[in-house]
Length: 467
Image (tube, rainbow, N blue to C red; front, side):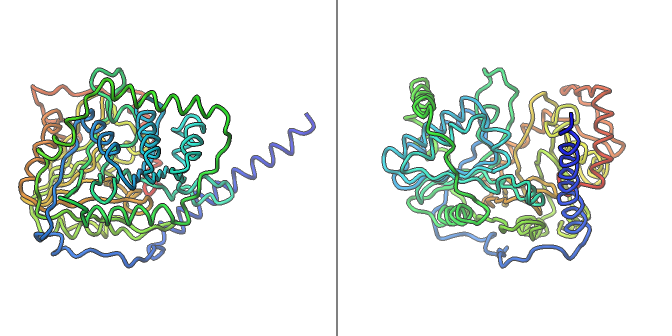
């Protein structure tokens, strides 16, 4: 009993230190103060983005969950020199073991494999260090964690890696919202709730300049000072983990004929006028919102907007970078309040829900499953697909990237895909009610969830920059 007092005091002091360092200093200093924002030399020429390239460029929408995984594995099997993978989360499940198994197989062939995972999400999602230990022990695999948790530097907890990329040699690259988890990839037969997401795969007739730009960004990310080399914890049970990953990969091949995948991609991909890669800077604290600003400049050239995001949240610092939205025909598509998976983001969204419904046509997806895709359409020829949510965290805090496609045909394909979700959604009125639709049933929000939403929205009013 005698030792509990000092321990309690030390714990309380540490929690106070963490709260001050994380919430007060980070929140007030960086976000309540307008001029505390990073600088950058990154900029993108809008006229170039909206022009036709001399280079042959193909873009393939990866919307179907199963085909998205098949495409990744088939492309990883094609890797000859380099295979780069980044993800925010790598959740426990079959998908993780299949993908990790494919990385091991590529490394066996002499391919240089690099894998970077968000350092905080690793704590939440990779259930056993043995997986990362096994990968890192392979002579051809390098593993890094982006900004691991450091209790002595509490403000760094906001510096998160949000990119999800697969890059194969100089030939193929994806950008999108899918993390490595069963809910993003396994088919309808799985018993888990689905998370519907979207990637875009870019390639050409040979090495492609956009792919090489994405690869250069990845290499900059991988060797950024925030990305720490993974330290192997233990070599025990290496064979158990390795056998599990290799067997999952082999079984996936046994159960799925992937011989058609590459030809399917080549035959169904759309030849586009240009694909431009845009990304944000690497910086702790409040980054300059390059991606948001670039998208806003694009949007200003068009009167018709269609925006899909799992969360739509605005904060005061974000407002100055938004495009001119007066007299625009805007459609928003997001998750419903009953089942949206991120409870805090849902509470923050509640603050802006009625304003969004007044500003444009707001749809909420009515399903126990959720949508996680981040996509935008402007006018008749601009499509944007990638990792950026429409929220302050993506705008100012996390590493983010998007691919902008200049093509009327691709725009139509993306519109049709997004519209499939709209047809399973209900329109929200400016009073916060739903417009009746006999073909779509509204999900009922439990009273406890309504109370929780209101309480979270009160907190979010003061900490919206974190969501």
